[in-house]
Length: 457
Ligand SMILES: Cc1cc2nc3c(=O)[nH]c(=O)nc-3n(C[C@H](O)[C@H](O)[C@H](O)COP(=O)(O)OP(=O)(O)OC[C@H]3O[C@@H](n4cnc5c(N)ncnc54)[C@H](O)[C@@H]3O)c2cc1C
Ligand SMILES: NC(=O)c1ccc[n+]([C@@H]2O[C@H](COP(=O)([O-])OP(=O)(O)OC[C@H]3O[C@@H](n4cnc5c(N)ncnc54)[C@H](O)[C@@H]3O)[C@@H](O)[C@H]2O)c1
Image 1 (cartoon, rainbow, N blue to C red):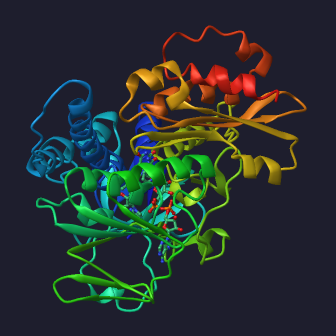
Image 2: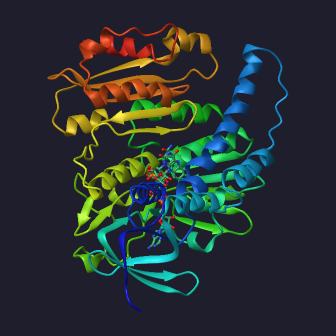
């Protein structure tokens, strides 16, 4: 078969690949997008969107329960079928990617369904799911957006059990009475709280000495406390020896066995780069993460975007990087990638928003660090809010330049409060300037003013 000439091939149409393919086609380039699964990737079908629909519903239940202490009796009878139906019909269209395909096709992107692999600089072979085979030569180059899969854990017995990952949990139509969650990262914490609020008895197992390891210890402490108060059995520092299944799951912790109806493994992600032909473009064939420069270039006529770049496994990172790669491919003059002020939100309640460096990272970077923490319940808005007012604002400043290099906002709508702090870190606004701001009364973000005051002490 003779190779076909195109301008760009995008392998993997997750959020970043989808964005790049659409923008490049709209700019007039000949673009072929390749995906072996659902066009749109993890976020719309198995990640952000379905999980946030669960969380929205679970938070509505929590607010209804809080109403009892603030406003009067409420009869709360959770009904998961509303959540399952919303995910199935509204969010994923029964896990059908037609709307994503139509959007790309309308922009002029040709979609090939199948496995794509590199076959030299600018060259791609696609083994189509329909048995077809395509050889493509991309004159501008290839954008790689191969994304991640749930990590598999080498725990004895686990692989022989029908455990859930994020792929299965988004399809749950009936809730179990009890659930063990392995992994206290964002997925584990978000889903633990959502299921708990729907009445599931959840045990959360974390191997590290605390949940939400990369976040500030103060943030993790708030979430640990909230989950525990809601009835979750949170165990940090555990070592799982073995898992068995006989209708129920039995998780052996050495000195104790935890039993539940279902098991969710949310212990990180793994890239899927083996067999993708990295060695044909001069890269090692066993890479777990692909190194990129500030233009997202990974090699000759090769750009890499998204989870595979190791710069943060977030939809907004993937799309940010895709925009940078598109600028480079179209010959623009930047701006190029800058990761100083990456923001992220774990959508527990309270939400954990953070931006830039943690205190630990700032110290490890050798900065002259000063920090300050303000308590949300002690703010006027926190006091008014009462039930569900847990949270903190933590600021991390470089004392030499007196600018914020990192911050956390753990609060009701903490992800929204974070916006102000993200702008401050991104634009390196002097602390002195932030202190002259008007902080509307009584908002949650007004607690930032208190934390700014604390930076002197
Ligand atoms: C439960 C959960 C909740 C999450 N919540 C959030 C959130 O709230 N906010 C947030 O920012 N992020 C969230 N994330 C993370 C987010 O989903 C990912 O960071 C995001 O999808 C970006 O991934 P990506 O662009 O690298 O590619 P992915 O979305 O992983 O997509 C990669 C695509 O590449 C395809 N592919 C792979 N290899 C090949 C190949 N060789 N040939 C052809 N196709 C291939 C796959 O089929 C897939 O469609 C969540 C993730 C999970 C699992
Ligand atoms: N709101 C968001 O933006 C959001 C939500 C969910 C996921 N995500 C993205 O998806 C990624 C994957 O999420 P995740 O929570 O699966 O991964 P993670 O890597 O962030 O956390 C996994 C957790 O599992 C623990 N773990 C690993 N092995 C274990 C074992 N054997 N026993 C017990 N605990 C174990 C780790 O110590 C860690 O705390 C995240 O890093 C994040 O970037 C983002």
